[in-house]
Amino acid sequence: KAGVTQTPRYLIKTRGQQVTLSCSPISGHRSVSWYQQTPGQGLQFLFEYFSETQRNKGNFPGRFSGRQFSNSRSEMNVSTLELGDSALYLCASSVPQLTSGTDTQYFGPGTRLTVL
Amino acid sequence: DQQVKQNSPSLSVQEGRISILNCDYTNSMFDYFLWYKKYPAEGPTFLISISSIKDKNEDGRFTVFLNKSAKHLSLHIVPSQPGDSAVYFCAASGNRDDKIIFGKGTRLHILP
Image 1 (cartoon, rainbow over the protein chains, first blue to last red):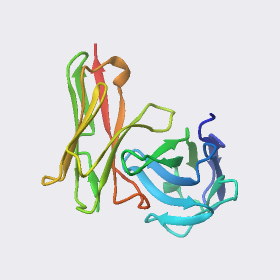
Image 2: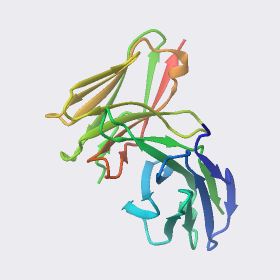
Image 3: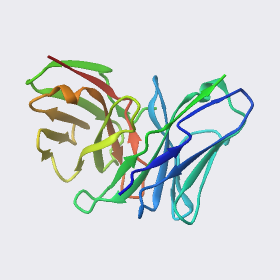
């Protein structure tokens, strides 16, 4: 079974531009979450989509948005890029774990975004 | 306000000895706790989890202990191996539909 894939892997943009990142979950997974990883802040939750609906949202400004398609693929968009948006953006798809009662997330390799 | 805290940014342990990674949380509503391991240039991978109804969960060399009264959990790796060198993230969630909150991570170095 193929893992979570993210495209592109690396991206360089300039301030003020917008960017769209893509995530394809593991086949059969309906939940997709997005995270921002920076050296100082670790992994910060952006949002989660389940069956095309946003189920949870983190504390990020409205410049960060996302959506999920009927095939569970998800996109994340960042508008009006700022220097501080430079980070590794990770996508994770999840499946419920019956034994633990929570979902186990499977992460993609991430998209490294650099804003100049 | 950081709800999941990993106060040690890094930890060095001799190969073959026990590695203990610690994590504290502030939200008493958290019911599920997870540990993830991350190598450079890869996404985190799930290691082990524990529900709040338990105080210990073991999987091979990895054991997670949960102390609810102290709002503290720890990951024990015995014996530590060179391949265990990575960043370890502690994470917590209120329930299945709740978002998962991650700590900032602890970089573990296994020394030869």
